[in-house]
Image (cartoon, rainbow, N blue to C red; front, top):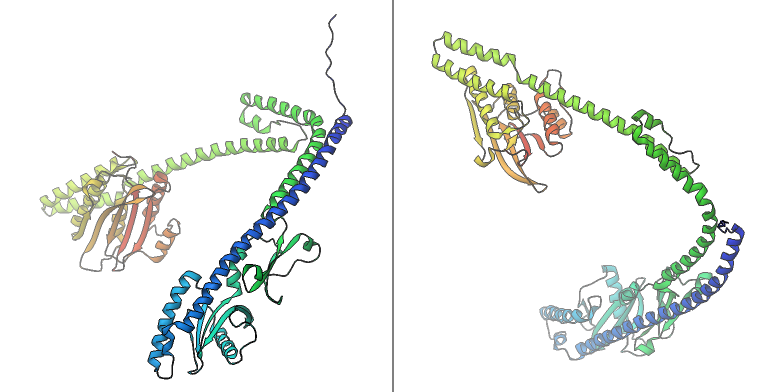
Length: 566
């Protein structure tokens, strides 16, 4: 007898109970590890801060000792200061001051430019700055008054030590030595002294307090943390006597410092993992019914799409699930089908518009009035017996219309366009009996560049119709030069004349990307050329209209040289 194989199932409550009992020891271990991590991170953070401050104190102590020795030696032994005596003149004082500044500048190279130096000679009442000032003039005057007062009424205590003092609301540390009526001073602000410590991460409520050796506070970078936040901050004392400095530092720093975010992230990750473990148990039981089965239905309906028409596909419901995602996909898919259908219609209509524009372009090539004017001119020449001129006119006209009727391609060589423009100018000069000063300056190697047909003739015809030359004769020049745009070789074709130039409203419309629509039909050819260029090149061409400063209009067309090479 065949035995049935049973798949054992577990109720949700049992699964959650097992998960809970498993989570309890995990939580205990996590709390223990977190506490130890907190203590160790705090210890390491304090140790790192102490090491950084110790290095800072040692460096600053050497620097202050070097400056103190420099100030003492200078005021006692430096012969430069001998110039400040009653036997010398003002010129000697100036020279001595300059020499002193050079000596101080050399010292600042090794100790730092934040340390300012001043010299005071009480017999001559001369007070000069021996280094570049980093304070404003008002503060400078108060520093001067402070120095003179200290020289006249010396304070009790150690005369050869750095003394903190508040000048103009700002705390400074200064060192002063007087010898034979000559006083030399070095002064530096506490902000500059403590600036290397400001890069240390002390926490959002951390601060640095500056005290003299007697415990008097002269400076505090921020308000000390108070309340519950204060328990989260360590207060460390770095006494000046231990480091050979004239001041004590009191630093409130974040217990965890740079490691706080890592610890918090670790804590949150474990809590999140524990919560997710509990939540996932419940979701696993309903996943099949609410997720897997609707996806199967969705996939089955999707496979039917190949056998349906566009209209049927747009109306097909892929799912009747309560899942928002599948319903959104269903709505988006139906919208996508409708969008594809609309794009097909738009592409078809765009192709129709393109074909209509090309037909209109070919129709515009045939200009009955110009053709009849040419025939009338030939007839007049024959009537006057000027058969030679009539023969030339007939040759120019036949060449012009032969090219015109054959210009049914998208691109032709630049040389063909130049020749066509020259034939047109020859016809106009014979028909109107006027000389046209025409020139063409294009490199021979660029004559094979492919450009749209009947592009240049549009602007040449526009010049003949509307340009009123400022001189005796009309001047037309066609030039070309190579340049690079977006790592691609381009040619710029420039057509100039000596007429009255383009109207300002025409130039503004072209710069704004607008097409020219005038009631009298002027400049319509320019708009048609821009449409053709956009049709053939999209955004890979450049077109500008402008007026020359010396007079006349300028048309510039930039086209890629490698487009449809011969």
